[in-house]
Length: 99
Image (tube, rainbow, N blue to C red):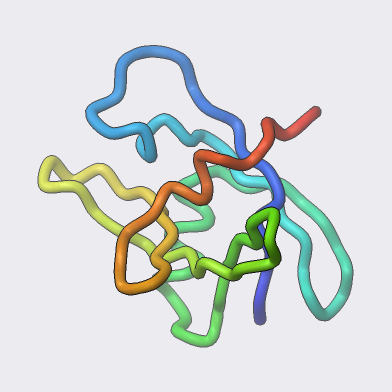
């Protein structure tokens, strides 16, 4: 199953890495068209538990960057995009989720 990440929410406070500041991710299911919002940890676990689960972001030019689960050296679990053989900030460029 694939979902497109459409927006993010960030938690307040100081974070070692800006990706750790993402608290929630809004998404749309490619097959069903259903939309929802999940915590960063829920998306991390969903991607980690099944290699067939895919999440991605489209930029303004239509380029796709896939989202992968990562773990910081201190143990914080987060998600980040990877495109053109580089870890990227496509998630951080998304608009804030409303509601």
